[in-house]
Length: 337
Image 1 (tube, rainbow, N blue to C red):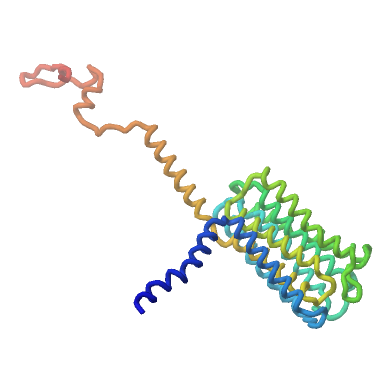
Image 2: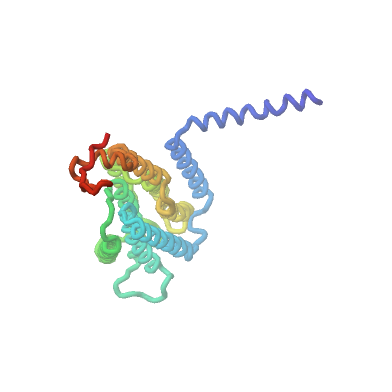
């Protein structure tokens, strides 16, 4: 009984040790690829199990749009606070992207069929699909801009933040207006609940943006490490969700539900890149400050303590006043020995 108790745990622990050793050899990129493949496998199984158009949940997409709008609003608030307090523009690109994408997804939620009763004069049944592609393609564009944008300290942070939010609102408004007009001009993207071939062309557009980001990332100047990691993670998630949407054939099928659920993950990646300041920046700032203090102390000579004898020796001869002796005659002071 004692021998069995001593021999069974090492036998059971050997496979676990081998698995942990193999996981330690995989770096962060390998884990990212492994996670992406796992998500793709789970989504494929979910899409295959759910039948075609048998569960029409009309509230599903508006609820996800509202979750993305709230998350992007929190990201905008955090990045704006960081820019004002730290007086640095490292999070201004995130503030721009979150403001623009938040307005786009808000417009998509309001134009989705069944959200607002009635019919608007400038909104058609194809407006929501076109706005969806605007937000879907806009996310990798924003993440690519984060990887290539150079930031610097801000002299007037409130003024810079106001210009950033105004520019984001103007660009988002122009994009929404353009997509609303194209919905009346271009062929429809969905007919009788099924997506057309033109919709598949728009679904492939994020892959082009990701390819441009991968080619330009090596040549660009990398931003903050935490922001770069969240941007890369967001691009990988965008690639996963774009691949899932390639299998969507109709509204309310399995891949349609899974793809819309994955739309929230890039917004969560932006939140992760904004929520905390990396520790490496604090350490580099402290090390540079200590280095500057050390250079200042070594460059300035250290002064010796004051002494009357040194002061007298350093004073030139003849500068002291004559003194009166005991017999009343004026005598000049002698040199310091």
